[in-house]
Image (cartoon, rainbow, N blue to C red):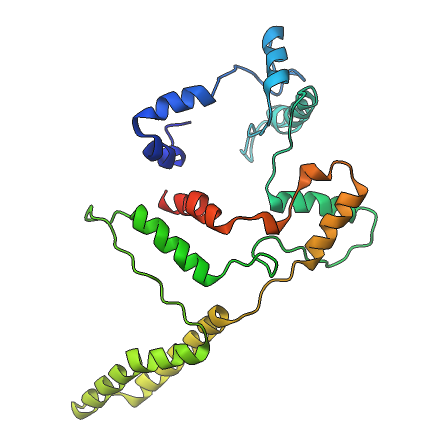
Length: 271
């Protein structure tokens, strides 16, 4: 598994220490989750050790063949998942692993289990309480790819420039007018005298380009944000009504956008 492309970034970061790093983190235990609630682990001492030391269990065992034999699919995908849950209940220090989106879904399902169907929207991510702006994104991208440049097909690092983010539509229109429109008008004027200027084609192309630019810049320059009041209310209700609410934490205000993009998101992009 560790030889797959998924681990390439880790290999680059750890270099020659990658194998020792993996050997410290991974211990292979032969088992079969479809057998029983002990996951097929025969050694009682090993089972006790696992129950006392495991912090998190992530079940990735499954068959995804659509024409799988019924007994095999039932054993792995159904009884296997049940056996993992039973095994996890015996772990004294186990935590529930999930990201904020999954946690929100789980809590929302419980909250609406006895209510009539509704169209309540729970937003998780960039919001008015913790916004992730285009300016932030450009800054993080410049910082990351300057320190860890993308290598082009020619084997040379790709140089990145500081992103130009316009603060308003007015500034954007002024920039486009001086940077592009004057040049385009000069070219159109020259083409007209050479007899190859087509007013219809240029006009249609220009109107389409302006429309595309307008839609794009309206989105970038807008000061609007996502409203996560419903998510905040859901979190408060969960904290009030459930003693296990700390296991399903999903407060978007705790997201460190800089840390996420520099240490997680862009690493995935470079993969």
